[in-house]
Length: 310
Image 1 (cartoon, rainbow, N blue to C red):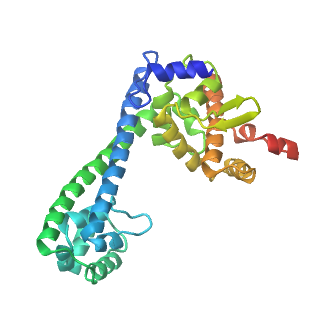
Image 2: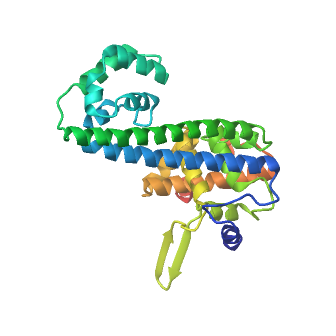
Image 3: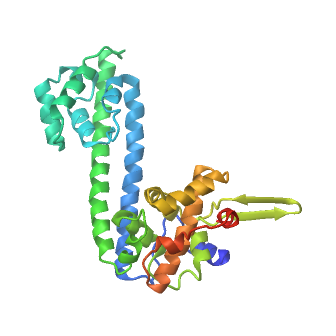
């Protein structure tokens, strides 16, 4: 099974994978959209980190202003404010009326007055400054970064909508959506990577190896070690982490995760184990046309031996 999975990996590089010809036209479209959206998300994260690192050098007030849960530098509010006031001097000159207008234009509808008051207070506080001309030049760089970040955010949102819409039109969408943690976008990413050709993976073990969820056992003499798999489809592995993270609120999934942690697994190892288990369930459900049943996937463990075996 590992040889079959490795053959597929060698045939289609994990970073530039294209669907095999046996896949349907729709799943090929889903793959293109899902991969483009994933690239846009990674690009957005990279630009967000670049902007954060740049602002640390001369504009700490901007970091303090948007260090709020659920709100970051890539938020619509932050992009709107920084596009208008890319340096400390310009931000300090913003009035409450201007701040309210910027927040409304960004799409914010609630707590606008509270946000405007807070931003005004933060921007007018005392901070260390660079020389005026240096701050102005850094502000120009911030404007350029914000434009790139705004484009990446819009691209990620648009592609996510298109990928999700295409996913809902596929016959396998009903089965994939029955799994906890799989929404339209995650489903599009998973389906785009595994395809809908039922002959691609000989069994569930081949799919698990392809996704990097199956561990590798290395034994030599008296030594015995189990490692995670490095040769894998990186995009499917990334989608799998999002899938399992979203599935954790499910009682059966959370119980299995807690049991693995109690046995000594680290967080990533427990997540991989869950990914491995759910991939096996997904392979079975797709092969048989069944929806996911948590009672069958995570049967009640009656004895300590059964719990340890899981």
